[in-house]
Structure formats: C-alpha cells, structure tokens
Amino acid sequence: MRKDWRNAVFSKPKEKAVTEQTLDLERIPAHIAIIMDGNGRWAKARHLPRVAGHQQGMQTVKKVTITASNLGVKVLTLYAFSTENWKRPSSEVNFLMQLPIKFFDTFVPDLIKNNVRVMVMGDISALPIATQKVVNQAITDTAHCTGMVLNFALNYGGRDEIIRATKTVAKQVQTGKLMADQIDGATLSKAMMTGPLGDLADPDLLIRTSGEKRLSNFMLWQLAYSEFVFVDQHWPDFDGESLKAAIATFQSRHRRFGGLENK
Image 1 (tube, rainbow, N blue to C red):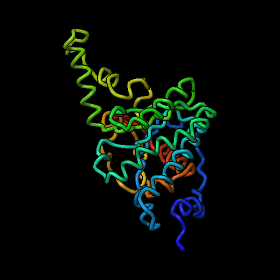
Image 2 (cartoon, one colour; image 1 turned 45 degrees about the vertical axis):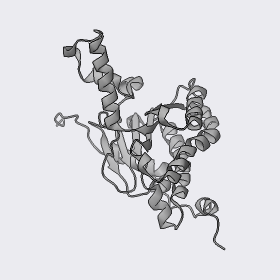
Image 3 (cartoon, rainbow, N blue to C red; image 1 turned 90 degrees about the vertical axis):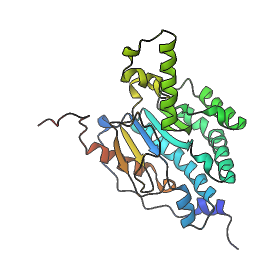
Image 4 (cartoon, rainbow, N blue to C red; image 1 turned 120 degrees about the vertical axis):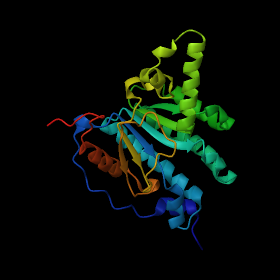
C-alpha cells in the first residue's frame, strides 16, 4: 500500500549537503529577499499532490529563518503569496491560507527564542479572518523582539504596492502636507510597504529557487540595485547550506550601484 504523502514528505532521505562555504561574517547581506519557487514541481517529481510541496516548503522556511538569524541577517523577506496566486485552484488557495496558521502556531516560540520579529506586507485585509487573526497575533507576540525581522509578503504585488504608495503621496500633496516638487525617491520609499524598515528597506540580495529567472511582480521598487542569485533547487530542497552558498556568491561580487569600480 502506498504511504500517506505526509509521511513520504518527512521520511525521505536527506539531500546531500551543500559544500560548506567560507563566509565573511562582516559582509553578510543586511536584507535578503527570497522568491520561494518550486513547491509544486518538487511534489510532482515525487508523485505527490502539490500541497505536499507547500507543506514541506513551510519546513524549509523554518530552517532558513534560523540560519539567517544566526548569520546576522537583519531582514529576511519571503514571498509567500502573491496577488496573482488567487488564480490557482480554490483547493490549493485554501490550503495556502491555512499554512500561516500552522506555521505560526508551531514556530512563534522558536521565533521569540531567537529574538526574531515578524512583519507582514501586502493586503492582509483580503485574507480569510482566521489567517488574519494568526498573522496579527504573531506580529503582536514578537513585537518586543529586537533581532532579525522576518518579513512575509502575503497577498502582495509589486505593482499594487507602487500604486498604493503613489496614492499615499498624492493625498499628501492634495492636503497640502507635501509640495509636488518635493517628491523624490526617499518620499516614495517611505510610502512603500517596506517604509517601516527604514535604511534596511531595499534587499542587498535576492534569491529565487527552482531555476526561474524573473521577478514575478516582487519588490519592483526595492530591488533596483540588489544582487540576484538564481538557484536550480526547488524551495523544499533549499536549506541553511544553500543559503550560505548564495551568500558566498553575493560576497564574490562587487556592488557599484551605477558607479565605476575602484581600481
């Protein structure tokens, strides 16, 4: 008899560990953003339902969060659910809406133990009430934490964010709080959903798993000068060593921000 997929997910042999990387702990990217891609393909390759990939992907979030925190990353932003993901089959969407509940119910004590604060960006009001409740509770429960910020993008879209920020600035002009000629990049950055992060709003490093090489409407404003690292691993196979390898790639590059490299 075929094993239940839940047992199959967690009983599979461990993947071969990524070769240990020598990292410069003084040059760890302050803000890492990850497009967690490939859950469905991971499940399909194992003849499992797509939701099995999402379930295993949740475990990956836990492992990567702790590794990032231990390395000294200040902000970890994870693309969890996009404004376009509503187009998926309702059964899959319903399962995805339950994942935050399962995640925070089991992981908040570990987040507090590791001094990690939860932040969420996106239109949370459109999520099911039960999902909203657990998300807001996690934010409240970790509000006192002063370590890494674990920032989830939930019902988030980069274009939607820019539109909302533009409306915010337009209202400021309309009410006389701001002159039109005073609008600059800093004005827009402050109005973005990442505004509360201040100087940490823009990711230093973007990682996308599963071999795809596109932004998929993610942080279009903030990623202007980020370093991109694309990895072939599906998200459920990604782990702490994978994160270290991506950071090592980041550290091998020279960021010029549009200027010239020093000779």
